[in-house]
Image 1 (cartoon, one colour):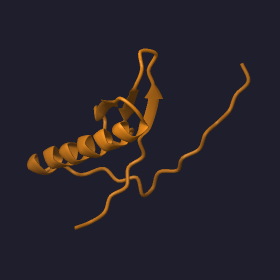
Image 2: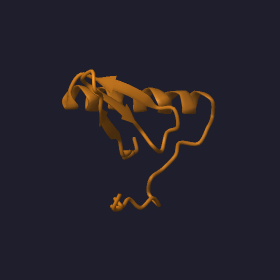
Image 3: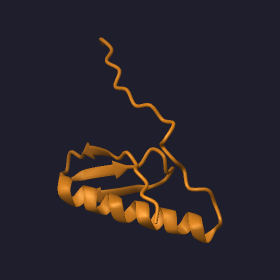
Length: 75
């Protein structure tokens, strides 16, 4: 079994909780009540997404060649 790593983004919602997106997996979005719950839900969403890709014989995206950087700009 191969280990895959995916970056997730957690956005705090005004009504509470967090919306979680997985940039490398378009449409892979979930929600959690707190950070720990959000991370657990993201793991489950990623596993289901990959399961669907495999079922449809589609390529599983990789982040191996992706660089991440946070850019700050003055507004």
